[in-house]
Structure formats: structure tokens, C-alpha cells
Length: 148
Figure 1: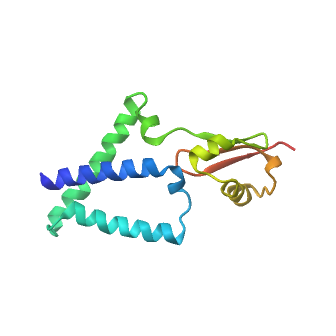
Figure 2: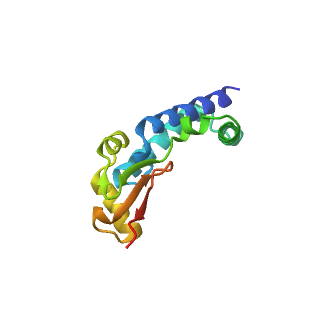
Figure 3: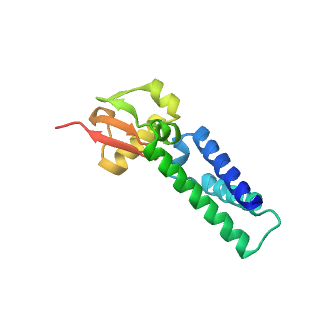
């Protein structure tokens, strides 16, 4: 039972950490982010398994994590407000070519982040050509160009 409790605790800790880190943490990774992710995964593995390196222990941990993830999926589907609490909501960052700086600051998104998505996804190189830039729940920025 200790393995199940460890897995549940680590799952919740990681969920809270990534919620605090914000959706920016989910955007494209830099080499620093990759290194950090590798370190987190190693620390998580140690915390999950402790001194038990058996296949059974690893399998039980994996099953626990998958079941907890499925439970959160059901909670999000059937309880109002849970999805918003866990995943957040989309945030409009640009409206009709105008930066919404307060929302950008809250989301920790810069002008350069928005323009990088605009160039990569839509080939847009001017802010005036963006009707809406929306920070999605998954951390990506959707760009809706102005009609020409």
C-alpha cells in the first residue's frame, strides 16, 4: 500500500508544481527545460519506488499513476468546475492587433512568445495582422489572423 500512497502523493505534487509553474512550462522546451525534466523524472523515480526496485513495485506504481489520471479525467468530465481548476481556461492575449498586457503578465507570456507562434503557425510577422492570440489550456498559443 505504501507504493500506491507514494505514487498518489507524487502525482499530486507534480500536478500542483506544474499548475504553479503555469502553462508557459508546457510550451516548447528549451535545453534547460529538458535537463530539468530529466532531473525531475529521476527524483520522482526515487520518491516513487524508494528502495523497492522490483518489477512488481514498478508495475504497481505505473498502474496507480494511470488509475489516478483516469480518476481525474472522470472528475473533470462529471463535476462542474473541476476541469477549470485543474486545466485552467483559454486566455486571450491579443485582440484585434492590441496586446492585452495584464493577461500576458498573468500568464507569463511575452510579446516574443506570441510572435514566434504567429510566425511558425501562420506566417504572420506583424502584430496588426493578428485578430486574436489565445493561450490554450495545453500551453500553446492559437493565432487567428485578421481577415484581409
